[in-house]
Length: 309
Image (cartoon, rainbow, N blue to C red):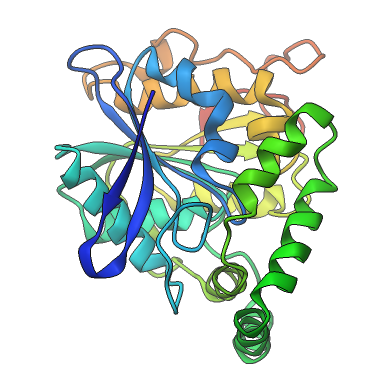
């Protein structure tokens, strides 16, 4: 695993992780969620994915060692990912997004269709909240971001404390603290506003590349119904169900990581390959119970199925 800091000239620098993978392997661009970093979100997944793919990931704006910015916009995060790909000599990739990374991945496809050959969307949605809630967020959150920019140290302490309360393993606390202590609190609040007002309903159905949707069936932050709705909106997308919450990428990594690897391999398979005959297609991500023969929305632990069923 190699870490770089890429200089965006007038915009500043960002941390990029680049893992070579097997010679000639397809490239994945891993896009992390709100309040995380590339390492925090994808740490357990890096090496398993690198057995099959070249793996790129970056810290988004205002997160960790990502670019500092006055105004956080999801479209600019997508542009950053494209710039990182170009800087690392990549002209074709599969965009893999978790939570906030899902909209960034889909925007990357929309704006850079010659770059994106497939999508893997995890614990995410095409619209996170209702339009009235989004309008309220547009009124309230800019003020909160302004306060955070005015008192960054106090806001950062609050962010770090909030994250550490969810870290149960003492050995991880120092590492997590080092990662999140570099966040820009005002940017995180702006990111919340962006997610509250985001909607891809008008264009998500135009996605024409192989797509996998990983649904966390016990997700209390992005309700599973929204995740299933996203899959149903993308023609030909495949659903992979994981019995886990919104932090399954780390908290339930034993189930999440193998399912992610299978989804990425299925998305990268040549079009001539019968996906449902591919190894692992109907296998489940075990999380303590026996697999059943069919997948019912919200009930199965980790199966793959067509979103149209």
